[in-house]
Length: 201
Image (cartoon, rainbow, N blue to C red; front, side, top):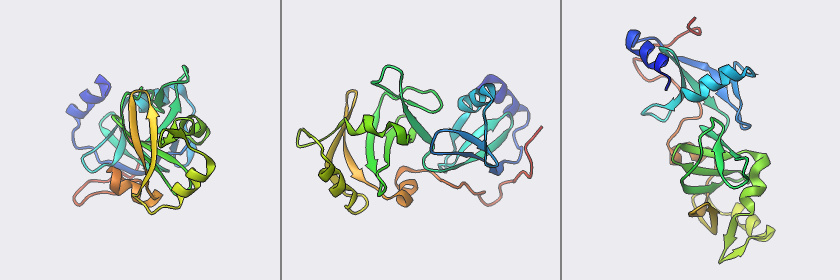
């Protein structure tokens, strides 16, 4: 996190957290009360100061105030890097490790990365499909359709190859992903937590 954020936390360690104001959509856009943030400098600040707490609640640390993020899908959204080979998170982090891969009932792909759980942006899915194989052969539509019909947390028999990583593709229902991957889509206050009613000036 930025030094100014860390310094503010030291000066004001008990500022109430904000819930229900901030969100992340499936296109990797930050929103405030449903309105997309477009200012590049604000986006950069959020990107640099975005993290998760011990409960799997992701937040933007805005100086001393923590603003918890409502997630449309996962804490991170994946894009294809400019070289067409690597993956990068919507916050600008290069993905070096893919630890697991999951396919939900609608065909969305979620990867467990070193940065956290991340969904492939819908427009990038063909890139991933080209890297799926079964028994050493590229998958076809029938294999993908069969995988979508499996029960949640089943092994599809399909393998995803990303860089040096080769991981099995598992079926995982959209609603089951937070429990399996350790995050909260709609963060709520814990007992005893102070709650802010407005954004700190």
